[in-house]
Image (cartoon, rainbow, N blue to C red; front, side, top):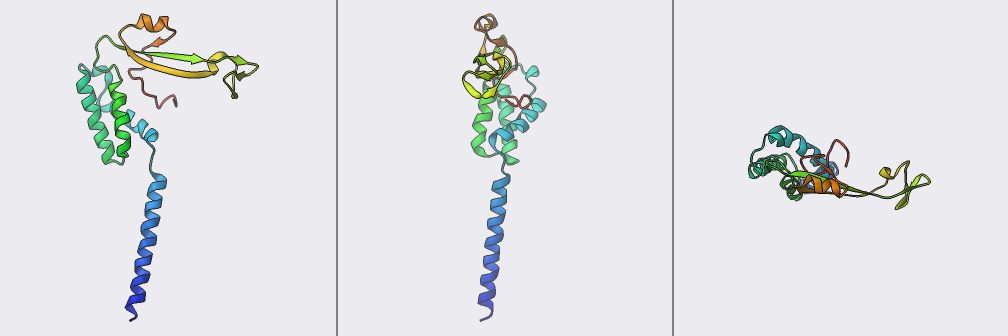
Length: 162
């Protein structure tokens, strides 16, 4: 009869340990955005954009990197976003460039007109939105107020914190 209470204690202790382990794993799980920097580092090392001669091969290379990241713990819900990032690049696309167009608000008396919580000293401190596209026509991009070829991709960069 002494075995039944002890077995219950061991079982309960096991449940507590399992719950604590699960809670700890969830607390330390990285977000998709946090995985983005690891993704970019690996893609730059294994699939350098400047060496690509075919866009499809580039996207395939990136898909292999994403598969490795999943094996390393990348949540599967993040895979599509990372693959789309590679698809929306100029890597392996001859004659294409990225075009980034920023829309700015107005700096009025040290705060942005569209958001009074943002302090400013110039209109360029008041970024409202940013659009990036893949284009063949850099002159048209620049005529629209855009900047061509800031990056080979329209994805956010880890280096700038965007």
